[in-house]
Image 1 (cartoon, rainbow, N blue to C red):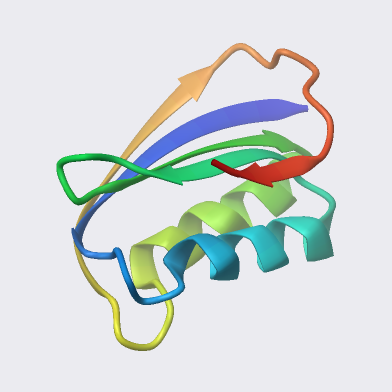
Image 2 (image 1 turned 90 degrees about the horizontal axis):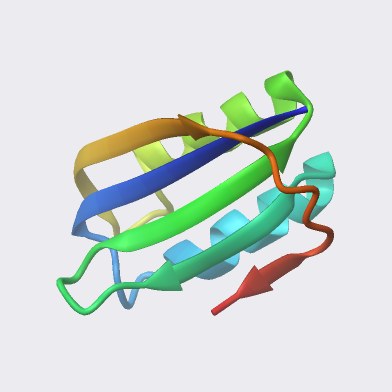
Amino acid sequence: MIRKRVVVHGFVQGVFFRDSVRRHAIGVGVSGWVRNNRDGSVEAVFEGDADAVESLVRLCHQGPRGARVDRVDVAAEEPEGITGFAVR
């Protein structure tokens, strides 16, 4: 199990970014959360199998249709054993 925290910058709010991440995370069995930040970025934490987590990181680099991703900051963290996936 691995954990990654991502912060996505660009035009990423108001384009169903969080819901796209949530649906993909549930589909690949990754736990965590995703939220909008006040600065216009989207932040997420993913915990799960390395391949599944990396597929979510790739999704964050692309975003859903209508999004414009300028930069994605990715940091590895120690897994906490969270369960489920939430939109905050």
